[in-house]
Image 1: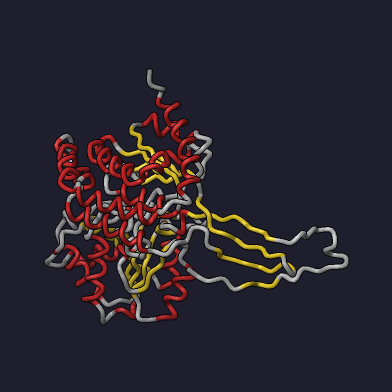
Image 2: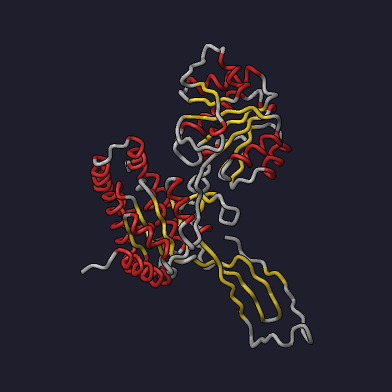
Length: 435
């Protein structure tokens, strides 16, 4: 008779911890290369499994996230290959101090331990997350959505094949009951949820285990009056931030326009957004401005309500407000933002330095799209998620964010008793080689 699911999770977490210690000594980059080669070989079977999942799903928006096609596979492979080629960071020394002659203290990077990664809909998350865990020497319990069951099962079976004798470091589950068991496990060190705001909030409120992630992705762009001559560039940046993937957590949700920008700049930017079928939620002065324009469309130009600010639309909808200068923009972002990613479009370096210092977000940009907030785009190979908390790791979390450290002290018969009397500590920093 099979074990109850709660017992299965408990057993899997214990196995993962034991095998994870062995994984730290494994040829992890070779495992990643093997996994990439298996994914390439089985591409057609993966697409066929994904088609079965798609055929069972009626929700059009969910289907977009559920689809695993050639471009997504190529993106996954690129990330895995990037990770495999990265220098080894596990076991490296990040700080060293000579306490006394023959007594050296080192801080050494080590894995966190056992991760529980709970993700919805997107099957490409499974290989990306697993690859990061392998590279960082962490074991993992993965909980995928039932809607991607066929795709996840095949992707996971190929992962276990690539891991070989280290396969018990990874386990795959489905269903709400598995989540409940993970939230209570004594063998899980960190939970990483990837999914809806409701999922993330529920997990944060129902476990004593540390949670890495974010509930909302409310990203802003503020355009100041020094950017007056860069309308075309501003339009490109705003459209990219809003439309390349409106449902993404790094998509633009609120555009702030300096009140000293010219009327023509504001109108031309609004016109371009409307022509690209972006629904604008405009504060009173801006709504009054566009209402008499030829491009005005009642279904795309609407008065903003207070609830439009601090809201993640996840669609081609954009809140637009006028603000009275840089400090007002910073205050607006810190009031309504979610600590994810916010950008300033300005020709003033001094203004950006103030913006960077003043905005409390994990990623703060100058003259570029918020959509760059991504582990692959940051050069991390992939990401397990984006963290908007104040404690590290912050922003897109790659290999470095999945490591903690131990202190290693090497002496030659040293004891503490003489210090403070006949002996003094040297405390001399030792230069360490940066990876």
